[in-house]
Length: 401
Image (cartoon, rainbow, N blue to C red; front, side, top):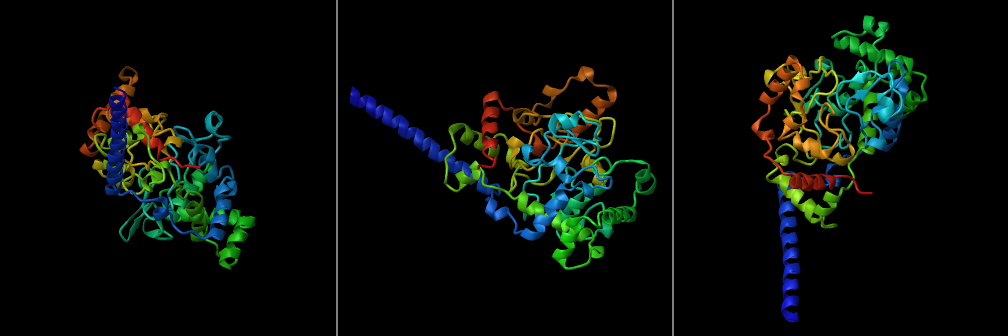
């Protein structure tokens, strides 16, 4: 009898090991087929001295026209390079988190995107609406044909400097002299900023690096320094999933089941694929709109604001999932603070909407958003246990110390 019990226990144990091995191999194959790459394959080379100078610009309030905000104010280490708020709080804001939200800063009507991997070899579309992107040899941006460089990362680092509410106070001087739909005016605005900070030590450091007088420092020099800082500070680090793919650790049963859901039934990898767990393409997911929206009155037309194409209405770039556990809230409007809520928004968006509190315009916009959802982003029903397993898998994409 004891022998039979021992054989039974051994068979159960062996069966669990076989189950684990089989499903771990299935998960590895699925990730590989979906374009997985390690951090070493993704991370770019960077120029250390220039990156250190770029860090000074990134953290300096003097880079803003009104000397009131730095890039760092909205990309904080405590929130893993985001700010922890639904919508960003730009010029006039103070502190971080709830303190900043309750300050008198101006609202920037979209969720702050984390910066991990932004300097990587595969990143070619920037911002929620892709207003800077590289398509083959072409680079598209708000600079149009007057862009100072064909490097999309440099262009992406420069645009926030001239964004109203974000890094520019909309005072009378700005409203009168610079608030115009004209690229030349924007370039003049940059010149004003550089003239203002010409005596700043960071400008002298940059001039010394390039061995030119400060008067020769231009957009490219500053943008290059900040972009090198991006490559250095926000390069990807090994995650538990990467260590799993390298056979350095095993995943537990919930993480494995969640991973198989991610690449299988959940259809997450239809959009969250490739080295950064993002196709960097544009899709409509029905996250509730928080704040007044990019287009005002609680509306954000998303990609349409860049292309003016009707088919791009309410579409936003697929966010990469690296460090997703630590970069809440989620969605272009920052409406979901929990990963499980963000997952549910993909297949049961009505769960979070109180139609009785919506006016006719809000219901209309919500209906139009639904119309833009494609087959690619439609996720089948997931029960609570499946959602829990999926969240467990997503947490394996966090950096390990």
